[in-house]
Each structure stands twice: as structure tokens, then as C-alpha cells.
Length: 101
Image 1 (cartoon, one colour):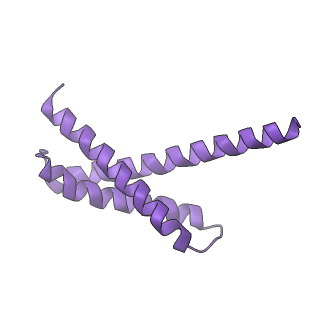
Image 2 (tube, rainbow, N blue to C red):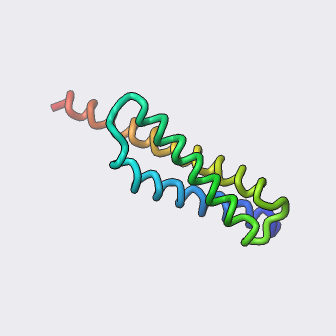
């Protein structure tokens, strides 16, 4: 594998974990409501972007902070989407098992 690809993958993985952690820490502080899902996803986007912005150049990535911020933002949003899909899947499986009882 090329070193540049490894750097990109490391940045995506680290930024996704940072976005997930920050979102899980700050989510309980947000008010319950219709806008909470959007705010949570925006939080994941911004924390992922900041994580990638700072991490990518430190890992030796070519293209600087802008590329790192883009990779981090993509990782944060992907993280938010994956968490939403998994939660929805668990919710629907729980509802279907309750109806079988």
C-alpha cells in the first residue's frame, strides 16, 4: 500500500473516532427535539473536520490542512450516518421481536 493512502486512511479513522467521541460527550447536553439529529450530525461534521485539519499534516499528508479537513469532515459525516443506520436497525429489530412475543 502506498504511504499516502495509509496517511489518508489513518486520518479518516482518527477523525471518525474523534467525531464519534465528541458527539457522544456533547449529545446529552443538547435539548431533545426535532433539530437534535441535525445538530448531532453537524457536530460530527465539524469535529471530524477539525480533527482531520490538525492530524493530516502531522501524519505527513500532502496537501496540508485543507485536504485533512475534507477527509475529517467526510469521516465525521460517515460516522454519523453509520451510527444512525445501526441505531435504526437495532430499533426495528427490537420492535419486530416484541411483536413476536
